[in-house]
Length: 136
View 1: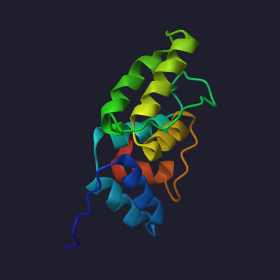
View 2: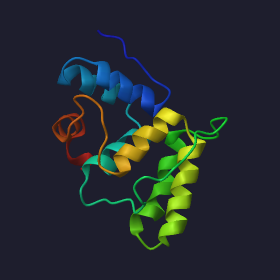
View 3: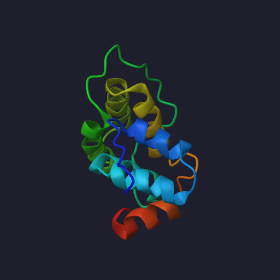
View 4: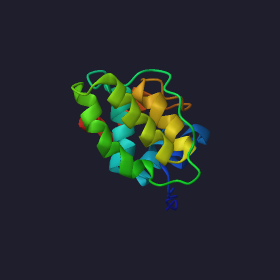
């Protein structure tokens, strides 16, 4: 039996998926590291019915220290998905989220919010084969 490999951060999971060879290996990494935040990122990226209402090109700077991780931040995206927050306030809130988490998590989150998550082999088909219709 193959040993499970756990990663602490979402960016580490996505980097491992990027490096893995073949859909089966990529799916195993996702299943072994299944968590709500990872599923949230997949849903944000692949579900065309879900929109996070923030502007493109928000300028943000990595924080001096990581105050939160992406697993803690995704729940704060819900109000930004409703579209009832003033755009300037939504952008400021999203910028604050990006600046509080690991810079690599922030890059992946920003890509997912704009439906442009760049991870080799991470496709809607892989996600559906891994989790079924529980994501999208």
